[in-house]
Image 1 (cartoon, one colour):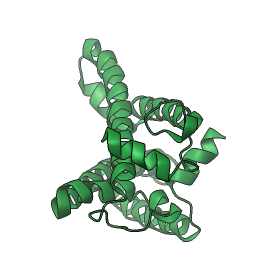
Image 2: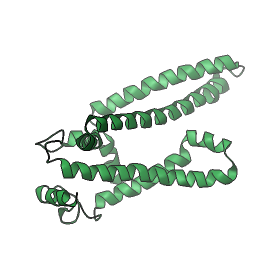
Image 3: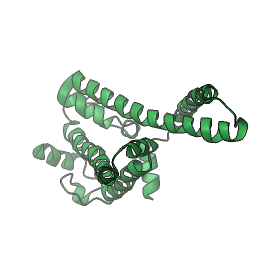
Image 4: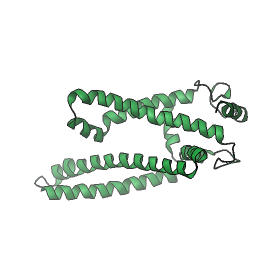
Length: 212
């Protein structure tokens, strides 16, 4: 890996945003901004996400605070370490025939679409690696979306529907309102994500804009 990254440094000297174009240093302003944003984002996710609040209510108070802190640190460690490791793997192996885009380098569209991870996994583990990444992303997305659906359906069915439209609503009516809220919000999320994809706004753009 060391030798491959040294070779990549020579090939990509002007594109690596680090000191002297080296991939073997942490002296990168962009990486520092990414690290700070990741700490704030992933720690805030644990403290503000409604699904964690629901788990905290059921937990012992003495265990809730350490659990939130450890959860925030874990949320930072997993994606940041995964991004760093697999990003370096992709840089090191993109000049090998096993890399999916060989002989060309990954373009900005592929990087912005998050294909660095599956490309690297496919290079070192074949189709099984790509399948593992697909499963990882599926579980991550469904976990995040399910918590959002629960939060939105609760707010709409109880805080909006029952409070302002039908104060005497039965449990069955509230449940029905929550179900329609889930369907409506799912359609909204799909449409909004399609709109972002259509105008070429990806996670890379969001991170860079927040860093600036």
